[in-house]
Image (tube, rainbow, N blue to C red; front, side):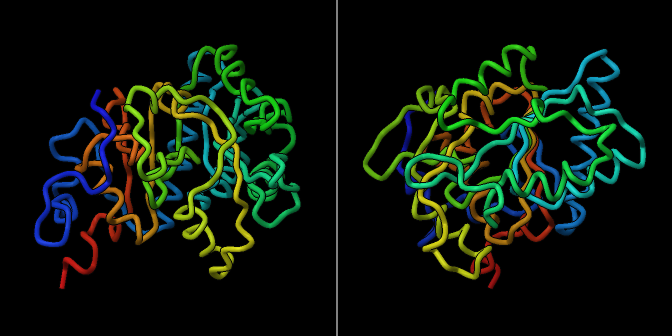
Length: 293
């Protein structure tokens, strides 16, 4: 593994890093990551729901319950997954779902579940409450990282024999879950960053700013603290499946796939995983608009 590098490291063409010029056809070429270009946002949601369902069914065929790390961003897959489970009458009582993260108050407590930004509340409204109770994972199988007991996630994973698949997205600064990159001027080796466990942390200005888009750009209402499943848990999953459906991800997916492997871009570490797939919307696969003019 290589040492962490500054975000501006690497070859540049004029004012732009070379990786920004990678075409849709060449995304992922020369890397171990398999890249899939799908259609619109709805097609990504359905594909992600189907991939989660396959993990559940494959584990059942092996005589056990699936253990999955799941995000709340992207978000549209959960109503689709709930509908599939109900229509196909799939018993998910042995399924363990570990959510990636949650916002915290300034004193490192969960924000209330009825808060509009609560991921716990989102999962209840858009997934768990839509499932037939006879098919749904029981409350003890609906795990969020606990800011008071962060070790619990690792304990659950160990008891379950590992994570079948980690699903997620990529943040504007390359984060997976809320694993934020080191602050400018701080150097962290790839090995050290990959070993980071579930923990409480402060969110970067970049993350808070892009997340404020969901509330009309009001940065002040975005919490400053969060708890996140660690890079260790995400990268330790047998399969890593990331999805990108936002137009602004066109640049960051290129940095992830074709920039440096570095803690400064956490998702770039997916290139070190033995079974990593990145699925993107067709508009995300296109180079940034400024390079198409």
